Amino acid sequence: MKTKIELEQNIISITAKIHREFPELSKHITEIPVNDSEEDEINIKNLEGYYHSLNEIVSKYAKTHR
Image (tube, rainbow, N blue to C red):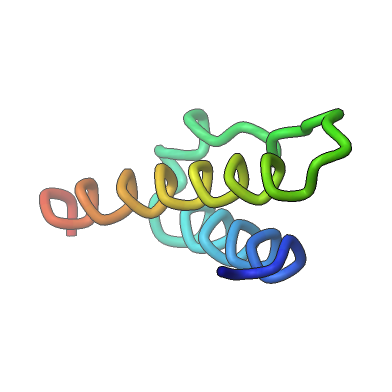
């Protein structure tokens, strides 16, 4: 399992890729989800889910718009 910092770095990286390669998708990007929970496990799962959703959007879009 990745750490919170690793996930945040991955999200920043894929967000930069979207802005650079597919700026038309930028409107679909939200800020990194904030979770007020004290439990790191829940926050990490939220970050993982957000990263995977961004990655899926880029992967599917790239197949049809290169």
